[in-house]
Length: 247
Image (cartoon, rainbow, N blue to C red):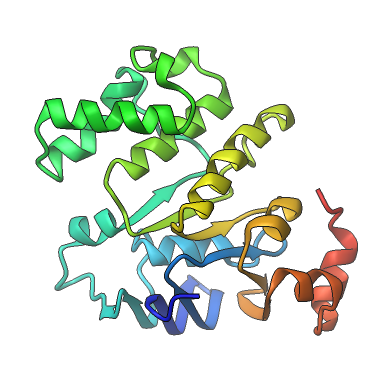
């Protein structure tokens, strides 16, 4: 495992009104780690991910990205988000743009890459996610699994150092889940640092370096997959695993 720390979260708290959603979260993610956040709906997993991409403002605590304490008021958040790519549950593709236009939008606008270079890179990314024949198709003509793979390619087009995935398969029909997970496994094999909110326990068990179990806004247990699934330490973890069929 690399010793290079990519993310460090210290004493992170976040509330929405009276609801205390994240309670004193501490977590470290190293280079090439795949960290899966698991837990029941409403446990704070997606909010934690959104705080890591600064889509939600923390109440207090620190978030370090590659050793740098990120302060939204003083940092260029576009530059930070280039380093930290995010794939959402719903694909958020531009419906009026073709697949390749969706992918080249951010590199040409934000990274100021020439259109020719962006197109060449986009074609490589489409090949990577197995959709090279869909470059000129509009999103409405794609299946959910294909849309999500385009969304992954679009995030990768910014050349991020870290990828965040917020339940990337939960909006998909069951038969389409596998193709998206296969793309994510390939990224993991290539050494991409990833933090994944997922209900896919089989994927977490196979691909994660670390499993983080969250409950009611707290990290209850953090362990290697084999230990987490075979020998959970905390009572709440045991209860969660009993109610979660291994997919």
